[in-house]
Length: 421
Image (cartoon, one colour):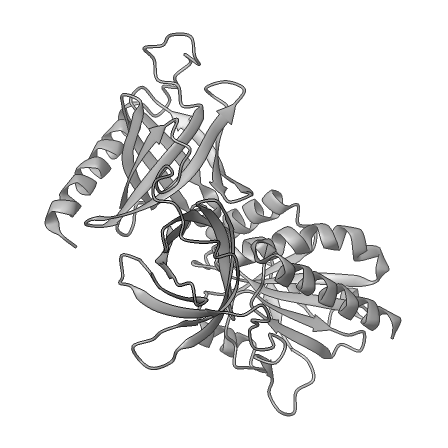
C-alpha cells in the first residue's frame, strides 16, 4: 500500500482509540436543539478509498427517535439493509456492523465524517472512508446522457489469470442514467448493485457492512459489454453478451454425494454444547433442510431471510431445518455471540450447530459424504427416509428478480413433493 495513503489511516485509528477511551460513556443529547451542534440523523453519501485514486461510493440513512437511539441503514437499489446502532460522542461517531464483526469509526468534521471501516477487534488493515450529509446521488449527478437503454440479461464471463474463467449472468435495469442490477455466479449473486450510465460507460457499487463492491465497464450497441471488478487486491476483467435466456449451470448438479452414500452422518454442537445429529428422533420421518452457512456470508444472510419465515409457516407440515455454521472463530464465546445475533436478527427458530471454520477443505472433512463442495450457502434437502433428495449450490437472492422467483417455486415444489411421499 502507498505510504501516503496509509499514514492518515493510522492517524485516524489512533485518534479513535483515544477518543473511545476518553469519551466512552459521554453521549451527546443535543438532538437538533442547537444548529451549532452536530446532528447525525439524515441522508449521507459515503466513499471508500480502496486504493489511491479509486473511490467506491455508497449511500446510507441515519434515523431514530432521539440522539441516543439512532440506527444506520444502507441503501442499495430498492434494498434497505439495517447496518447497526449509532453511538455518538463529543467528536466521533461509531457504528457497530455486528452482522460482519465490522465497525465504522468516524471523526466528526463540520458537516462531514472522516474515518475508517475496521474489524471490531481492530485487527487487520482499516479502510479509509469519508461521508457527506445530504448528498443522495451515488456516483455523479446527471451529466453525460446515456447512449442507450442497456437493460437486459447478459451471458457474462469473469476472466482468470489461471485460465479458470467463470461463467456468470448479469441482470440490469436502467431508468434514465440510473442503473441497478446484479451478477449471478455459481457461488451466489452480487446482491443489490446500484450506479449510473454516462454515454456507454457504467459504474455499479454496493455496501452492507462487509466489504465494498465496485464494478465498472462499457456497454456497446451490439449487445456486448466489457468491464472489471475493482478492488484493493486487484482488478478482474469480465465480458458479456446480451441474451434473454442467459443461465448458470444447474445448481442442483454441482455438489453431490460420493458413490455409495445416500445421506449425511454428522453430530455437531449447538451454542450450548448440545450435540445435534440428523439421526436424532426429532428428524425421523420428516423432510429436513440442511443449510451450510455462516453469519459472515452476505448470500447466507439472504438465505436466512427466506428460510427463517418459511420455517415458521411450514414447520407444522412435518419439516425441520438445521443451520450448519462455519464461522471465523470456533471458541464458545464467539460462536454464542454471532449465532445468537443471527438468530435474533432473522427470527430463527430452527436448530443451529457449529461445524468448523469456513474453509472448503474443512467442510469436506466434516461432511465426508459430500463431493465437490463449492459455496456458502449450500442447501441440502433430506427426504422422509433420511436420504439426500437434492443439493443446491449457492443462492440466488431477491436482487436477481426472476431467478429468485424461480428458485422459491422450485424449492416449494420440491418440499411439497417430498411431503406427499
